Length: 103
Length: 490
Image (cartoon, rainbow over all chains, first blue to last red; front, side, top):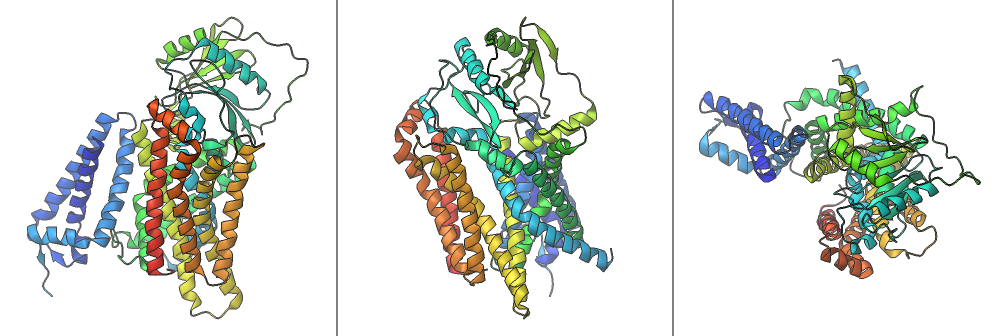
């Protein structure tokens, strides 16, 4: 169960960085449509809430505490991944959603 | 915010962070380890491995516990800790020499188990709570550091706030650079802010009441009376059964007062530190009082205190908190390293000799504190296995070994920094640390192999698990050793 919660939480944070325009600008990526950001933000909220509910359901009393700390750890891992392997993010964005900004 | 105010907060963050960071690194590392204090205490008493884990408590065991408790009842803060899932033995504990210590009793057979004298997890706990200086003075120092840490957190938020959104999820990918250290420090601080604030505030809440005007006075031990009439031991088992029915679970400890016997509820049940109890009259065995309802404000206070100690929940919460503690230690270490590297870079432009030496000394202390804490803790574990079991004052020799190593490494760091041998000292200390971690499981097997085998036969895998974790840390430190060797002194 922990692995499942970890993955869902991690996914939600990936959606968050996909939704942030500041990160798109850093890698010179532009949006294809206005809906992209909305979809990613909704995905982030949805997955994060699911991970919270799962935490509360399986670890009743300190479930919320596990969720807060797990989100912090995952956010740090996400930042490290983005720092050392930005190609994972840029490839995803180029493949599915974005175009490179004109120079 | 104007530039002057921002500059004030920057100076605050830099200097309070530097001086406080020296203590905070040790406090965070020991705090992280003390999350598993009970497991470490067992690991440091390998003789326990040969005794099968008992699920029941006998009357004989409780009587023996009472008899052992009577020897130390004149010492302030004494209790009988009952078996739990984490520590399946009865421990009769008393607070002496700045930490808890005592005897271990088999909960089924009722005999005192012969174990080596060790500080165990209680020493690391004491290091975290009061730097092993003493409950009152050490606690005051830790409280001051806690308040300083709060200031560092607030000033950190203020100075990094303007660039926070711009640099969200940004880590510069070259680890030898100043920017990388700054990014790791900022990002970790940003994401772990809720944890750091909670840990800091709850830590202050833990210690502050001691120093309030109506707080508890410093503990004074009264010597045992020579001609005291021997008390008739109370029948503890029926009372334990009553307490178990009252709490719906096994109580965690028994505390004796003049007229009452108090049974405290197990600490895994609630997220708040309720300290629920039921007390019985010593003579009649009738219930006299139990814990009362609390206000919402007290509930918040007790919840924060329990979050700090991570007693509620199962192993998962403890692992998550240990990970947070580990990353927080990395946050502090990177803060110290960032300061050193910034100063070293600025040395290139400055010609002031005294300032140069002050900066070098500070860098030496930074290295000493980071590596000294880690090596000293590993040395403590080595000494636990190497010192003869029959050695007089064995427990104190373990602790002396810890402090001697710690201060030796700080001296090494300062000397190496003054002689411009930063890379050499990093490589040497990292090599020593990784070797100590990698070889400790083998030493453990050589020294206590029969206990280890007995533990495995008794389905007690605690010793093997801790050995494996230490080995894993050794591998990580070895990787860092090769990394530093390749990259250089930055």
